[in-house]
Image 1 (cartoon, rainbow, N blue to C red):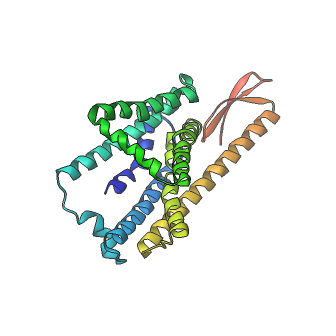
Image 2: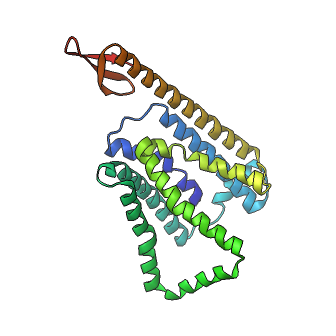
Length: 265
């Protein structure tokens, strides 16, 4: 259930960016996030059925996540997951809007303060004995110990830095719209590394819908960027400068006639 709720994140970020930042998003964005959300949902439902029942029937794939009777803890957990979705959207919008105020390194330090320092202080206050569990790492082989710290370094520093750069360059919505790739990578790596094939036709359809949606989306974006680049080159060759450009139209300034021209793209 938590995975299904988290799957709604690609829908909330574009809504928040459109409402609060007034960003004009590509028309292809909404069909993409809707279809990738549907595809990822089918994959999650199929995997839930396989883990819970080891059964590949369509009915179990649909109903498995909902067969557990909800209690108060489940309700609190789902509510916190919904809150986390909106909080993630807000954080990504702030990453974009703070580009003129905070550098990449400064933003990374603030992120580390929130994700590392505060939980450390809280754990010391709540139950200092939990720190003793770090001694368990010294019982592992050196290779396992080194691999664990390498993964932690890559996630907390390298991946966090790249995420901030991508959100600021692409925008929160375009970055989040590609989140379906994570589900696809999990399915592919599980099949290649753990020998877990596509367990049901439902998962196969979800995988196919997600792949086609992202492929079409990337194709449209690449084509649109090429057309915009070609337009800029044509305008420069014609002796006019671009003062303002969007996906639909551009405002050009003619240096010889000292006048503006608006053209459709």
